[in-house]
Image 1: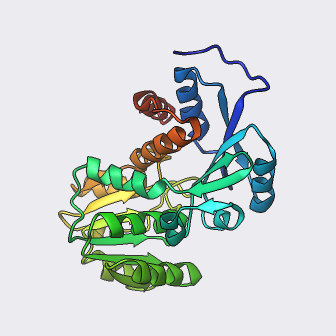
Image 2: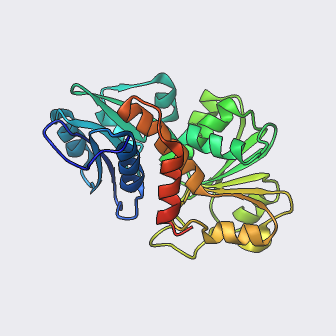
Amino acid sequence: MKKDFSIGTATQLCAVIGNPVAHSLSPAIHNAAFNELGLDFVYVAFRVEDLNKALNGMRSLQNFRGMSITIPHKIEAMQYVDEIADLDRSIGSINTVINENGKLVGFGTDGPGALKSLVDAGVELAGKSILMLGAGGAARAITFTIARDAHPGKITLLDLTGPLLDGLAADLKAGTEVAIESVPLGPGALEQVMSSADVIINCTPIGMHPHEGKSLIPAELFRTGQVVFDVVYTPLETKLLADARSCGLVTVSGVEMFINQAVMQFERFAGTAAPVEVMRRVVMEKLGS
């Protein structure tokens, strides 16, 4: 049941925060869903640099119901919420915060949303070699979820050497039973890891604004039978996916993960089943498909 758009004193506020955030389709997809169900909610976007102050503000505003967390705040946000499920705490990042009467509850939907995207595309993960590009918040969520629920044979992490890469590798080794390899990005590293990868997952911002038209992987490194999943969803087809598709590989767009994780967030914000097809239609319209 659709309602006339009207904001009042009882309207519940939800938002996406990040830096940058101007590219986000979250306001369009959530507002369309709220309107479709006749719910008194509104969803906006905020560019946030000081995360602690932003979350303290959320805690003090009674009508501030839910928040989606995007780059670069998914790991730091854990410091400022009041409650996190054990699984999400072990993952080490969250992408959603719910305000329960001043108590902030954090959890993640990136991992389950990504795994559903791969499963829906018919991708077999059990026993396979997974190559993860990046070691930030989204990479943590996806690798932990795949390691625990999809039973891969091996996960290789590729990123610039540093605390994020080393920390994710150590946490995966301690928290899962999957073989974990950590490879610093450097001369010859891509050739090494691509030669054995069955599924490649890009969790870096390469391919999205302001890095459109760029890819970490030269097309000549692809092998027949590989699957390529890019979590970037704007543009709908990144250079990484276009190159992989031109080589005849199975590709999975980040738009699938975006829709899946947004549906999971919406249902926690609103406490009701999401109008999935409405949310999908809005996203595809916004992306020009």
